[in-house]
Image: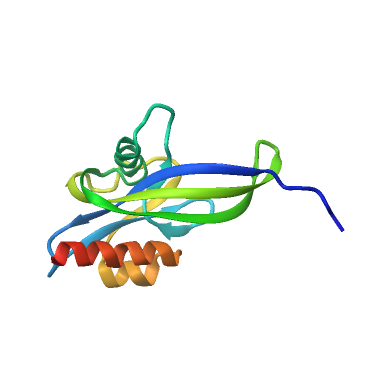
Length: 148
């Protein structure tokens, strides 16, 4: 039995549900990250000196190639996972601050190396494609906010 304690690392990220259209024809941006090749919402780690809002806008721009504006905070999700970090196995306690964002510019072609595909999808397509249940819940919440 291995009694070694796995160190815990707290990580704080930010991202967004970027949309275009209105409640009758709303589409959202999803990204497929590499190497996992899983579909998710654009998000990433907050850099030193950044606010959550600044990080969310930057990460959306980097991962999706989209420029957006924040409409409202959506939710902060929290989860745990394990990963190799700095040459050792770590338990990661992650918090991600998500914002509802309105698309301003960009077509998804100018994304960074962490992403291999960017798509505009309907709400139903997002709910079928996104890997994580918490992110599907965020899309439902965003759609409800647009419909208000």
